[in-house]
Amino acid sequence: MEKELASVFLQAKYDAPNLKIVWADQGYRGKLEKSVPMVCGWKLAIVNKTEKGFKVLPRRWVVERTFAWLGRNRKLSKDYEENPHNSEALVYISMIRLMLKWLALAEPSGSYIATNTS
Image 1 (tube, one colour):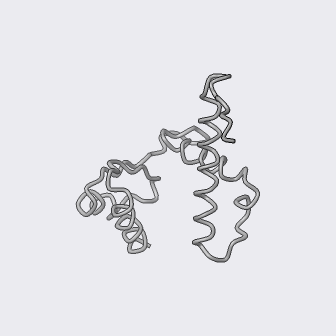
Image 2 (tube, helix red, strand yellow; image 1 turned 30 degrees about the vertical axis):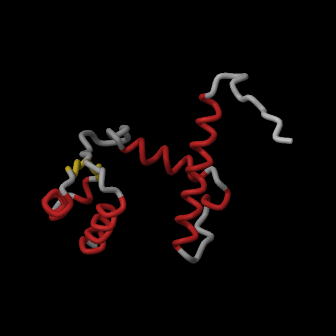
Image 3 (spheres, one colour; image 1 turned 135 degrees about the vertical axis):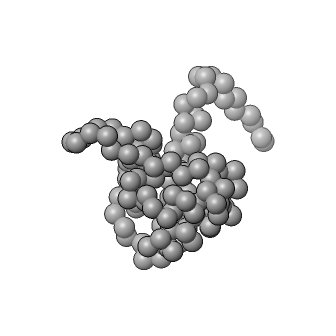
């Protein structure tokens, strides 16, 4: 499993050169905690459970919220796709749609000026 995660981190290093910190669950404590900073140059922050029972963990809510946003899209609510590239494309489309929605809400009303192109 650690070899698979290491390959994911190396691919992420190539895809996201500006990445500085990665948050992870306690399950990723171990060799990755030492190798990720050495190989990728990132800080690997392990989010620890401090109490028994349910408690919102720091930064974990960001991931859960993003999964909830993605799950609102019908095609992403279940794993329908056989090809992982199709699923990845659907995630991109979903997040683009979400960002466009935020941008549209951020504009003050009446700021859109329709132009006649004819």
